[in-house]
Length: 217
Image (cartoon, rainbow, N blue to C red; front, side, top):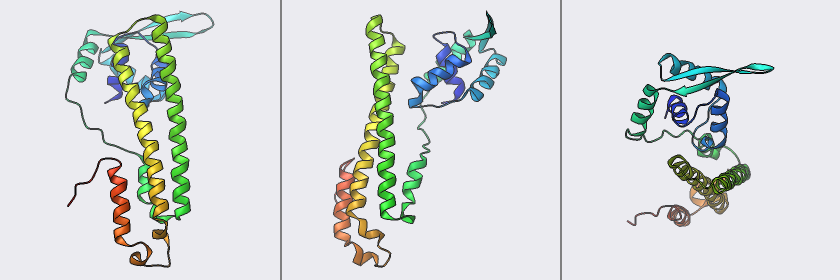
């Protein structure tokens, strides 16, 4: 997904200022995309140059004029074509997984600390997302309305919740695995004497089976 498509998607249902768009990113869309005002306004300018959006100034007393953006027919065609195109498999960039990959360079106690700390970070994010879902659902019930946008955004919110739950579970299971294999970090012993392969094999099979299962030889 590109930022232009996110902006066009938001403007496809309502007119908005750059600040309104940023707020939508911060609230609901933060589950799958992040952006800053320094990125949003240049993109809006590009979209206006390409005649995919238009803008108008709304006077405000004692404040600078407010610039409100609207989508054009060309913009509707662009977002419709993009939404209907085959989806791309995302290219993942997860800095914490990169850290975990190289945690053989720190002590086992540091490894466990880092995993527990990050588990707490993801739990905090999950708690915040639960509040967002509760508030959104309360608003929907009060208005007693349901639209395709509300329905599909709810599906995205659920996927976001599941993702956090899975990450927290992964942290917990990885902590247990590391604790069971602490002796591997012993700098004074050879690999064979630190942890017998059969024991390591059983632990690894249990670890992977908890997620997807392993094919038996």
